[in-house]
Amino acid sequence: MGNETLELDLDYIQKKYEKNKFSNEENIKNKVVRHFLEMLDYDEDSFDYEHKTLHRKGRADIVITVGNNDNNCLYIETKKANEPLDAEAKDQLATYIFNRGKEWGILTNGRKYLLFNSNIKGHNNLERIVFEVDIFNKKDKRFIKASCKIKLAS
Image (tube, rainbow, N blue to C red; front, side):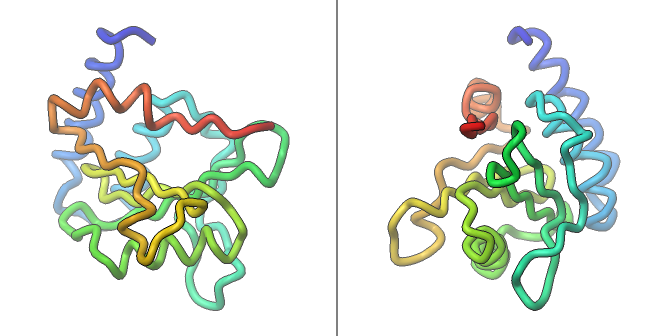
């Protein structure tokens, strides 16, 4: 996918976000985040929605299995468009990936995407954020394709 296609796809994602920015979390997950992840070449057939975690309360919104190894998963926690990606939301995602012994997770409200790596040592979850992108930030466009696709060993 070339830069021209990426920009067209981001325009599409931005339009989907704008249409749904006042709706609920389910609409953001299904109408924005899903398309964003597909744009990054994740196969929608590998998406597991409302995945039960080992945590007593809650379910991960999307878990993507990469390759043929069930241990290679990317956990995605989605929030409403107008909901901030605050410490509580970051802790929720961190709990999901830590409890399952997974390395990668994404926290998003459809506009901003925060990539977490649980193997990064730190005192809090802010230190485990690898990067943050905003689909409306022109400077972030160059990082989206290069950085969002997590290469997990199969």
